[in-house]
Length: 342
Ligand SMILES: Nc1ncnc2c1ncn2[C@@H]1O[C@H](COP(=O)(O)OP(=O)(O)OP(=O)(O)O)[C@@H](O)[C@H]1O
Image (cartoon, rainbow, N blue to C red; front, side, top):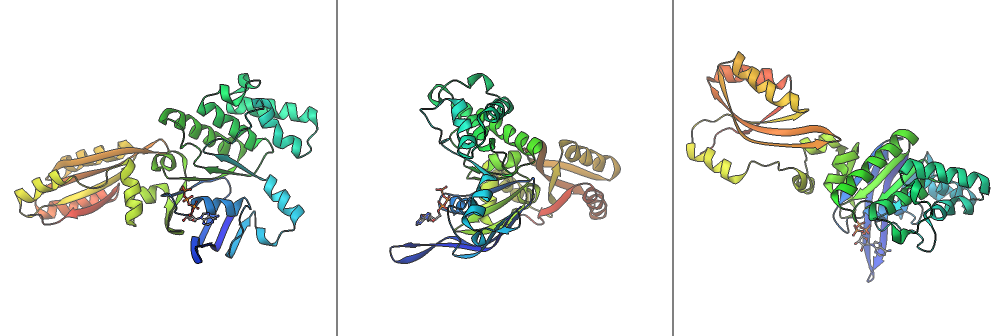
């Protein structure tokens, strides 16, 4: 649906080249919620501006629905633009207009007849859950309600793509959750492809199917939400994961392990769905002559599904431990973390 092929965007800064986006290849599928995460200055906003045609790539191609944006004539560009909606961190609403008129605005500038506009606005305000605020002004609304208006306005012209630029960064955690749920509903019911940029891992964890991590203009890692949470490769990705889930064994526990010394069998078990983690370990204790000692555990939710790590020590005869590991790895992911401590 959105393809970046070797895309770079170079700005001139004090006579030097600044690569805001650097040789990015990404393929965002129709109907998915794709997150781009990175720290400030990573190049996320520039990437989005290349999709909504506010910027042209210095190198490479950006394709939307298979069409190379740089090859389009102005009338065709306008048509593509209508297929792309956008929401912003600070909502960007017109304060002098009511909610109804804010949402009607993109429809009237596209020449939609008045009778149709009213019907469409009513329907879309109902969808985002603020029909009763239609005649109020943005100043009279909470942040979450303003973002609902922003979403309604972006959806008014029935786009195929919704770009979200830090859409929940100005909102408290509860309101963030409700807006993310609404975005999920937008994707599920309207089949709209969503590209969201954020610096918050809890946002991508909540609703993204896949994510790309950006740093210094480059995509340093990409994959499904489960891949990146369970096995982050790059140190920046690991740091992002750590903001919502401690991945490391705490030093105090490691210290305890090394003090006791000896030949230790310590493993990290990664599981999706709470039911998969604990039962497999009780089966191990029952079926093998192996004692299971849980040293550390962490659990979070990915798209509403429990996801976690358990760090366990297996004690027993080596042969029994090998059999137990063989059993475990058929059910959940298991990785040795410390073979010989102390
Ligand atoms: N119009 C411009 N002219 C010159 N440099 C720019 C321009 N726009 C962005 N940059 C530079 O490009 C780099 C990437 O900026 P960008 O805004 O895309 O990052 P970001 O990840 O969205 O950060 P933030 O979350 O702070 O907006 C930064 O170093 C920025 O200073």
